[in-house]
Amino acid sequence: MNLPKGRLYSHYTIVDGLRIHARISQEPLLESAPVVILVHGVIVSSRYMIPTAELLAPHYRVYAPDFPGYGESDKPKHVLELPELANILCRWMDAMGIERATMLGNSFGCQIIAEFAWRYPDRIERAVLQGPTIDRHARSLQQQLWRFMFNAPLEDPSQAPLQVYDYWLAGLPRIVRTIQIALSDRIEAKLPYLRVPTLVVRGKEDPVVPQQWAEEVVKLLPNARLVVIPGGGHTLNYSTPLELFRVTQAFIEATRSQLLQKESINENTFL
Image (cartoon, rainbow, N blue to C red; front, side):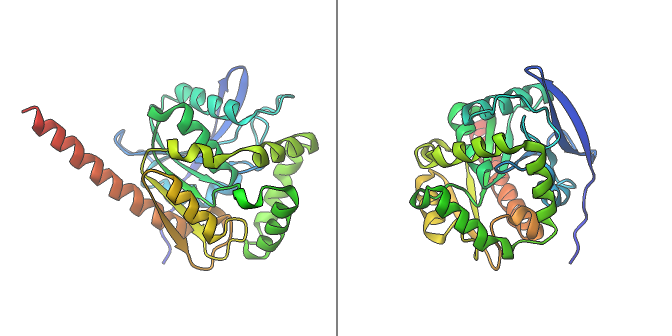
């Protein structure tokens, strides 16, 4: 079954003197429609988020930014550390007039979301952590390289050229430093502070995020559940976007209903 896809357009915003590129949905949705920000993974850009963004666009106000240093955004000499990535995401939201948003991240994007939620808890409404890294039981370059090698055959072959192009745009020094940042981050220490409703999504065959680690992530989160998508690898947002869209939409709509019920109860309390 083919679902309708939305259109995306490129938008540039100046934040802290840096030009930040984002892919934004074009659908004329109501202002009340939830905002969904797609947070890309290590070294790559929002380019590989397009398949999921296009499926979300008819239903939500979708934004997929390229962080400074990656994709079509400016390339500062300084490689932004995780706190700086969270900070500039918040300032970019300010520039775009976004007060709060649902955040959907893949891989290293989940680490950015965890950092963001720790620093700006009032700016995130709910989270979807798809393939959250880094597994604390395999926090070494060698282990991660092996896992990504085993994952490669599980992905859509058309993704590889996109990754190579994004790697070329980033440049070798930024690649090396970004990997170091990802490996040194202790996401497990921040997950307890991600107090919004959270959906953890894992591809059943994903060697980068084993079932044990995915379950540990859910236990560390105050309000989370795990969904495992059969046959999926590490980047469901590109290789199996329809399945990721379906579980994301169900999660957003279920939590929207819960939020509306709470608001209704609070209003009746004061009547």
